[in-house]
Amino acid sequence: MEQIKIFIGTFFGAGLLPLAPGTWGSLFTLPVIYLTALHFKAAGMIILLLVAILLSLWSAPAAVRRYGEDPGRFVMDESAGQIVAFLIIPFHYSLNMDIWILLAGFLLFRLFDIFKPFGIRELEKISGKFGILFDDLLAGVYALICLQVILYVITVF
Image (cartoon, rainbow, N blue to C red; front, side, top):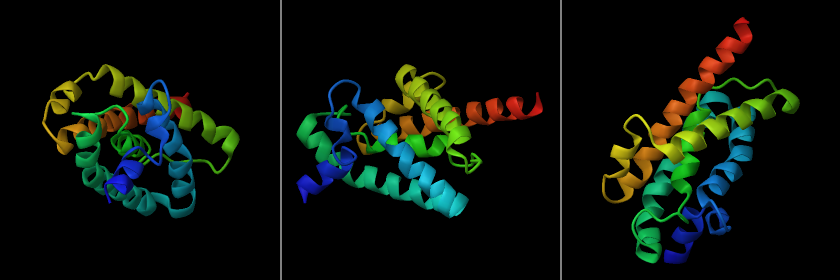
């Protein structure tokens, strides 16, 4: 069971890739987000987020035991945060247009996750699986807000 938790916590091995495992985990989550949003709309996105949160909380202790406190290889938390960034974003059913939305949301989430402004760093200090997860969820909220503003400005002007 421990191996399964590690496999899921590393987002099926994405977190084991060299250099910037959180970026890999976020990047590999994008196709799942896009397909879920297109086929299952907002309800599917909420379910996807809940599943990612539950999987993160379930598998984090195994990753901590194997890799240490808040391990970089554990990226299921990044997947959950990346999902938040797109939770209510409308896609256009055209990959040519939607790829730019995906790229913008990805970059915004990674910026907030890496630099940890506006209280994100404080959440990271919470010990255990909740601290591992909560900072990424807040980074996702900030990315979502910024992405919404960008999309609004683009459509108005």
